[in-house]
Image (cartoon, rainbow, N blue to C red):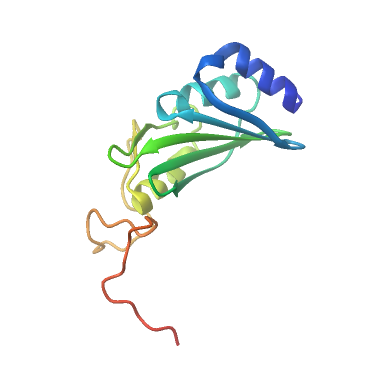
Length: 150
């Protein structure tokens, strides 16, 4: 399936929910959706044969978060969900892509984004004594005691 075919089929199936769709370059498609449609778009892509989960990343974009699922086969598709900071929730996709679990845990732990439906949102990277509600990848994070580099 070519980039244009992926875009056309998605527009046909889910046109109204896609905020932005663009072919960024050869073999690279970027889709932007509101968080309510994130899971729906990923399910549609998997049904179309775009069924390999490459990664899920979280980004603090300043006034909102972005959860970006990178899926592909021969073509890489980035599905970017816009998530408000005052309610950082998005549906988990572990039931679609089993490998999503650890990626979602990382975004939850580092940014505080809650993946609803992920049964294993618990620490994986930060030490056990790390304070609750402190997220080191948020732009507003400030270490209490910065240590000099030596």
